[in-house]
Length: 281
Image (tube, rainbow, N blue to C red; front, side, top):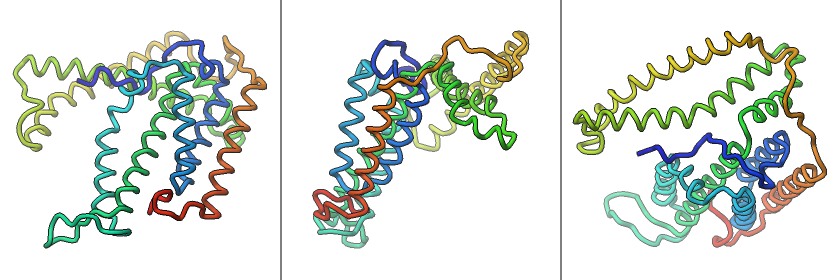
């Protein structure tokens, strides 16, 4: 079942992350993602992972909910780790499972697999926390404000922000819809979890067809509801909540910029050449 997956859901609260300005929250998340891809050794990765764990604690979102948000990417994480272990021939060979093939397990491959796994999980946590602690309305306003310079080149920023927010908002709805359709098909005798890969793929066809039909129906109903309420876009619209950047927001932004600077410094000067500290990329 996929009903417990929490990607794209907003959880109301009064935590420090909920109080953070949405514009600063998006900016800090982007800086954090850049820092994750810039870091090349375990030392800065440990610092970035500690930041994500601290953010989870500050958000006051239950750990069960956080772990449910990682379900969708665990297959990708395991597959990526598998490739890093068996296709990385650098370092000292620890085991060669097949004599006829060149597949070997090295210490560098294992460290690289751990490095990539922690990086992907931290990346998903950062994105999930931003969405879980920001309401769709505030997220739309923040994206629109951040992209406002694009209006100089005649880009409809409000429509772009609205589309992005609606897409995030409907992820939990689609996940719930998949669970309902799968349960209905199983009640009719469909075998969705048994058989070969080809048989399972064919069994998913009766799931995706009604899912697409319902998605288009929901999109039409949403567009019709917005038209009935005289929705005309962002021009001339007022906002219920006015976003204000506070001193704490500036401190968080400056702190994350310092972290990014430290990660770049460590990467440029190539600290941590020891294989226990450096992931062989």
